[in-house]
Length: 230
Image (cartoon, rainbow, N blue to C red; front, side, top):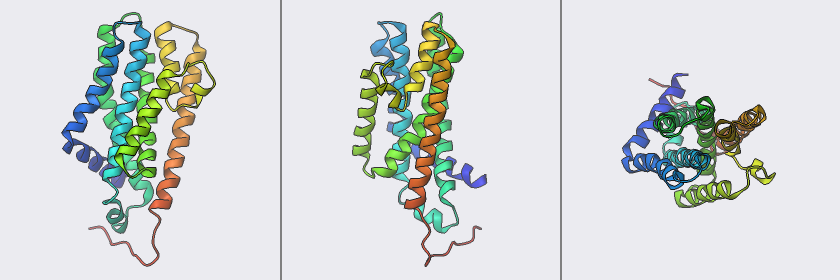
């Protein structure tokens, strides 16, 4: 557990050094919100959720890319692959929750007649899914530019697809849109249950995939030995 916390702290410190990145992480959801603010409130909420998803995914992508050179040294120091990807994921989840809080308060102040518990749950789904999703892209695509373009493509597709279509259910952040529909339009509980189930399934699949990718990429080498930790 201590090693997970250590990696989480390292992740947050690395992102904190990139102040421009942190500014963009806060600016992107706000821009998404402002663009749709003058239209139907449901559109502004869904745009805000996509902005949060983009921000956390991008942070995960940058954190994964930045840690590539450090990971072999941590492996030699005795850190196992699950310490690295779970610790980083933990740090990104904390960052995502910190980012989400002011935007949740924004919806409370700026929009009326919402199920605020549903809005909070939709934001939680965004954060929980976005962290492993961005890490997976960062692990598979070592260059940040390609990863950022892929993230942009996913967000664009998510925004353009009809949420009721079968193809939309294959996108990673469909859960937040479904829960947001329940929270904004006061629909039946089926939207909430479907969204929650989708978020859980997607998160589990992403974590398992990230674990597999990191296990292969950071597999132990037989001619190397772990140095004891001081």
